[in-house]
Length: 225
Ligand SMILES: *Cc1c(COP(=O)(O)O)cnc(C)c1O
Image (cartoon, rainbow, N blue to C red; front, side, top):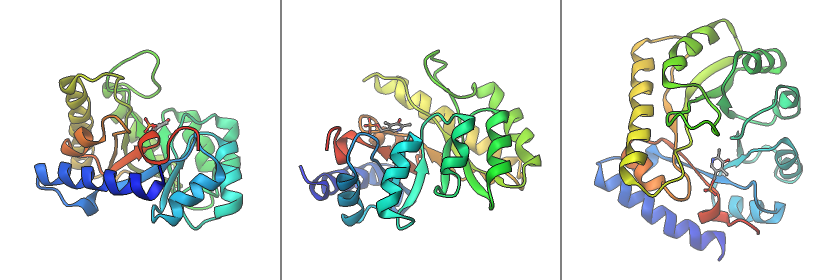
């Protein structure tokens, strides 16, 4: 399937989810996750009009960056090893996976400008997942205020792998409530506007629960293009 056809279908689904809860489609940024696919397929996605691209490995990001350069808005979405920060820092606009102080220190040190970071939260508490617990998140966000190159632009989570709509909704709702709580703190270093949640299987629910960024790989660009 061509990306443009997948995009048409997904846009329709985004639109339906938004209408259900009276949100505007423009509130939701679609990030095409190109981690499984070739440079050509990533280029096809960009040419189809998707300006936000996400990668979860430095190698994948760099090879696609060689071709597309800074035309797309690049999102680093996966767990990030501290020693790899220097490879990606001047290429990305957003880092969705800030989950520890040592990583914040390295980002702060290597960046030449403010980097929009999303704090990754492990809402479901599954051991296999990265991220801070709901309880740890606020003290962590407060501790980031001293890093002048880090802006806490939002929160990110990965929902559990399940079809159970209630479990998914609970997960997304808890992240939204945490975001609202951070916003009431009015920290200059943490405007915390974005909610990065929702992937191929659960993005419609995530939008209904308030997602402002959805990260879609399989359903949009496929897994082996
Ligand atoms: C791979 C990945 C996605 C996209 O997953 P799909 O199910 O293929 O849409 C989204 N977010 C993160 C963090 C990922 O690693």
